[in-house]
Image (cartoon, rainbow, N blue to C red; front, side, top):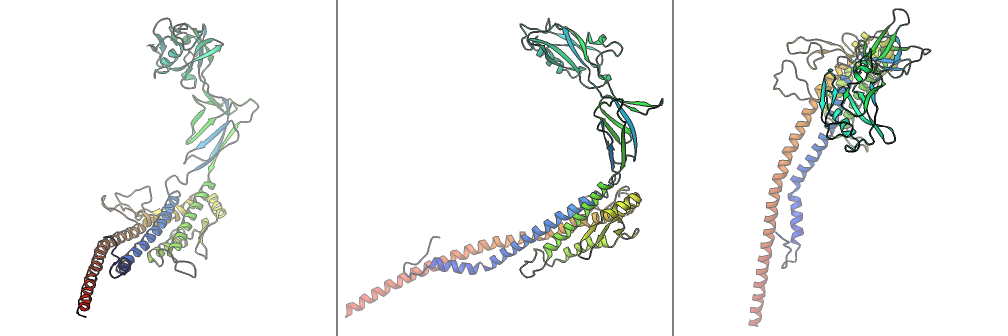
Length: 488
């Protein structure tokens, strides 16, 4: 309905209706304020849940199988680099890089063509086909799109079973020929007899007008020589990468060493530095989670506004769980202070890297147990080689924090739970309850929209009817005044 401002009464009825509607809408405004408060609470809970998930990730890095078996591998020379997989044995060994792997290459000599692409004036084949030798030693006839050198090379490269790749090369101005390169490096990929390099080269490709191929580079294996005595031995590889020279150890040769060069010494040792970084990351993740909980649950103090979740007892309990997990130590090993992890008087978790490194150097297995140990609770559906959160009894600090973080964020499914059971973390549950409340409040707000629209229409009709009534009264008043004036 349009404006109902009175022409008779002169009263701003639209303004009056608007003011009355503000009063009528007070219950809906209160509902909207509640929605805003709940939305802030959900945002706060989501922030906390994210920090707990980060704590879970950091704790897993110290409790997963293989986390404590990482090795630090170093090489004494730039002639070789080394990598080691988790579980490789500590130790060292030496060798010399005798040679690098090379790729077999042959180039046709004796004749050339004046163009690589002109099939009419510079044909590379006399007919429409030519033969190549395949990797299994058999011959195969190929039919290029035309007789040009480029088409011949394309036909060879298009055959998956050929033992080489081909390319058109310019050996002099206006003189082109064909070059063949083995698809892989090493002696086994050579397309010539090891005793007579020219034996297979002659028929590697036949039917061309380019003469015969000659050896440009012989395919050879890379070689590492281990030892200097009569019992020294050689390790070979078709590539410059030597896998499993020791269990879990890979060496990549980068350059051939001279006779006077010192041997390459490969050293492998447990990577205490990497482990210390993982511990530091876990401690920092726990502190970040504690800070987030404190920020979201703080009360109003002076000019500092209260957090969106001020006074939430469940979250304060979660904060205490994190702290008590560290402060309480292990029931089997005692205080975590022995490996550098403790809680200071300000409620912050601290990490002493030097204490950790000292402990790990003295006894790696015991130090690992302080972080990754638990009491297995047998069950047919339990993982016998891995910590089951919420089921096995956590002893190590990483297992304990993993359990606290998991139960708070995503929840844990127990071996006894049905496959269809949906698990939910405590913080996830709080988020769901808040979202359910928001949904209910929004439904009430929507219902008030309908109610207020009806009320506004009723008020506008009421004031419109008042204008009509007042107009009739004015007409009657004017008529009476006229009648009285006529009597006089």
